[in-house]
Image (cartoon, rainbow, N blue to C red):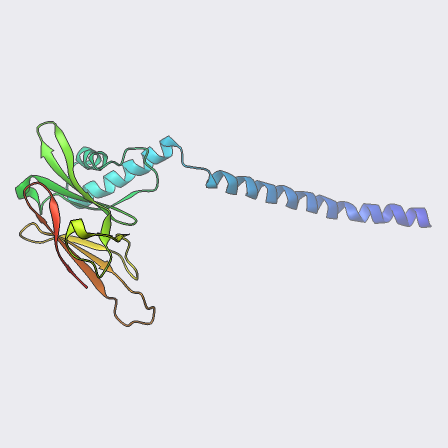
Length: 200
């Protein structure tokens, strides 16, 4: 009776072993898929993503897709640049200077491009700001921060006279009811945009 009982126990374990084997294969497949997803995007994938975004911003801005792509590339974002996105394209507010404002995220970086006979050229960019408490003189900046907002998105707009205004939320206390804004104003001096005013 004992040998029979032993064989019967082995027989009963077979479905369990099969189930465990199947579970192992499923987990292995999931791990492989996760590993593939975590791999860096290929050049083809990046090019496809940028092409889709160009199409979206062509519809938003009213510009041809080829023009959006040219603006993006002039700002330094090639078809295979990873981890970037377009935050805004303003081709009208600075038109009187033959300029275009291009803003890339996620932590915003500003680019001003100028149209010339041989194409678009970047003439000014901004990725750092003075921290609150420092003078507005560019030469006196001794401490800088990026354009990432604390407590909300950074907003960039151009006034009617062509002044670039950057508003950076600066919530340091999560219990504050309102989010303080640090506002930076940049004016064109004929060759570049210079910080002329900052309010907190």
